[in-house]
Amino acid sequence: MVEVSDLRYRYPTGKDDVIRGISFAFKRGEIFGFLGPSGAGKSTTQKLLIGILKGFRGQVRYQGKDLGAYGREIYRDIGVGFEVPVHFSKLTAMENLGFYGRLYPQRIDVEPLLKRVGLWDDRNKRVAEFSKGMKVRLNFVRAMLNNPKMLFLDEPTVGLDPQNARIIKDIILEYRQAGGTVFLTTHAMHDADELCDRVAFIADGEIREIDSPMNLKLRFGNRVVNIEYRDRGLERVSFPMDGLADNQDFLGLLRTKVIVTIHSGETTLDDIFIKVTGVRLHA
Image (cartoon, rainbow, N blue to C red; front, side):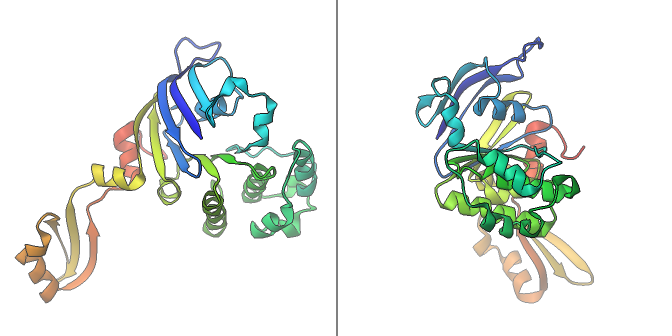
């Protein structure tokens, strides 16, 4: 769907490149996560891929064709949900969607989607009266207006309670299941782990790692099994995963103790984020 080769970019007033020779690709029907700390180059890369920023070096190909060869027709194919919702506050939700909808030759019936994200009853309210979470949900609906082949989503669940975040994530997964492609930037590592087929970690304008969340967790984790069990109190012990079936201490523990938890030693994407980028989340 998208191929990026040796992409480099420097802002007109900048002295150094902020994107430093990154290369990656993702296929149709894939959710590709683009993860990194603030200022790493995530938003700049997204703006380059959707044509907002010009003058890059390297190559970007969309569906096998050089990005520069496309005109405005490319915007019929893509939907964009920016991190900061873009709405006209004095207009109602329906008036906002009507305005943006007229920009496309084809558009969806928004009623089912508005109902699903819980905004149908508020469709005739001015957006100025909306909460942050309502604006985020409306932002997502707007990104879906033109029934896009590809979605660029920047923090699509930020500011949402768990129930509404679950609804948005389910819609994203269903969109992928129907053949849609998603380029997702987020600081929510749990969302990336749950949604993404593969993720790329970017720091200082360079890609540090690309792989599936599971492969990354296995590669950066430890091949051990951690067990919590009750004895005099709550005890913890670890066993090597290799040869576990023949480990008599492990088997004896299972037979004689009350087991509370058993976990493999795989790490989390949060831990990998810190190791790879050198930056703590929410610092």
